Amino acid sequence: RVCHEASGHVQVHTNAPVLGADTVLSDPILCEHLARCTAFVGGESQQRLADAFVVVVGLGGVGSHAAQALLRSGVGRLRLVDFDQVSLSSLNRHALATRKDVGDAKAVVLKEHFERILPEANVEAMVSLYNADTREAALSGSPDYVLDCIDHVDTKADLLATCVARGLPVVSACGAGARADPTRVRMADIAECAADPLARAVRHRLRFQHGIKEGITVVFTTEKPQVTLVPLPEEAADDPSQLQVMPTFRVRAMPVLAPVPATFGLACAAHVLS
Image 1: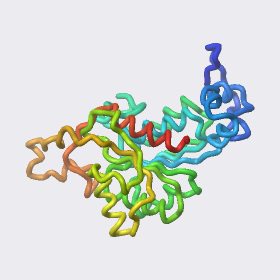
Image 2: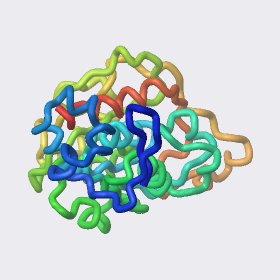
Image 3: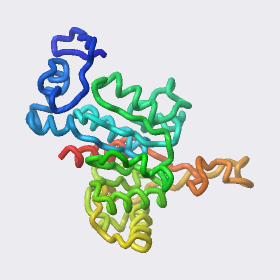
Image 4: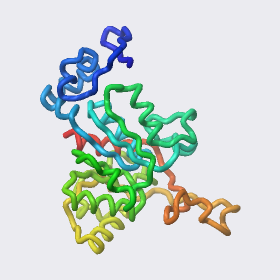
């Protein structure tokens, strides 16, 4: 277990403590590692973060940035949920993945990177698609907060409805693709973001399938999409389904610039930390 103190010398934990309220202010390495965050929020709040349990569902350009910000702020327990693998084309927006990680599960990749950043944290990698069959495992353990960073409408609506039904605090990221201006990212109730196509579709399902009209905090952008979906390659024109990651998932790729999904993810994390 390796950390760095302010002096620059490498310090080794032979028996690394588990990050928690009883260690975050008493263990010298943890104390120094999180010193700037503790100076900002105060010791009592840092202890609450150390005891907090957050579930992040969806670990792409939004979720990976949200999760790493929570870890770097000292959240003691994280469950990382995603079925997908790191691809070459996802490296332009993922928070930590490298070419060495291509082909590996996003959840496992983040867990491995996180263990090098803050080894005392309890990080669980759940390589699974969130759906009706996996929701119990994904949301078990009474999480303090859930981050919805999914870009699939039906799955997103199910997660949000489940969180509302169980009284789990949740913040949801809307569409970050095809935009270029991070200064137009906003946070509001889902009832107030009609301009976002993903939020509009999710809100429709929540209203008519679950009777939910409001009460969910979302991160969205006021910027209209600047580009359209990537055209299908000629070889897939006759059978577009061969490009689907999963059945019912989008076939054509969404163009993405790194700053916007990163801003979405950091806004989600900031909301949880506040």
